[in-house]
Image 1: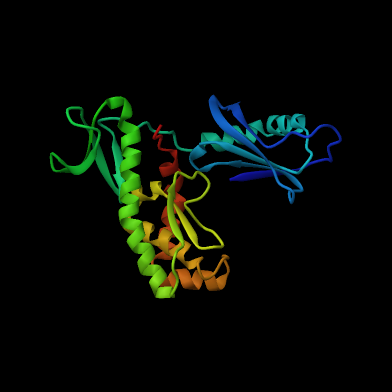
Image 2: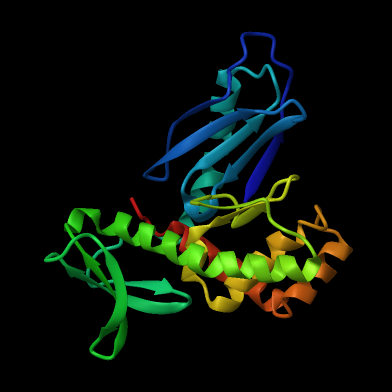
Length: 252
């Protein structure tokens, strides 16, 4: 989500790109101020899941104008943030989705810090070993491993059907997008996608692989994407409904 506001030319010392904390709606959010040579106005964006803010500014804009811009749109920010899901904390006894199925988190401190999937009283469960303080990080590491296990074969399958090959496959915790493809064919994916159903994971991979041939979002791209993944529309709708909730889960 984003909000734009046209700026006036600045005549004093410009503020360089920077990062700081912005206090709004009872939250402390990371704020990135980024200069863009092509920007004609200030643009405010809330990262997926409400994990941070980004203000894009024209070159030479004063820091004071950025602050006044944020103050003028505090009500807008508070309204948008209030509509976002809370950031649930991962701990023993709560559930975390894995491939679309809720799994009960069970802490077992007696063994070294690993995560294994199983069942607890007939329900899907994730057993997290090691110290409780490291439980969220161990679950994040587990999702990264699962992402590599599922996504790399899917990339190979979809790329082969296009006669293409990915230069590299990377996994990140991105807050603004689920995946990306560079001009030289390097693919990146958010490992959080492993919390989504398999059909959604397949769509994301098909989407990024399609960019190996069509580096745009035009009609030819979407036709290619639907050819690789017939459930494209269904998966896109699922991400639109549920993506923010997955991005909001705190793995810190």
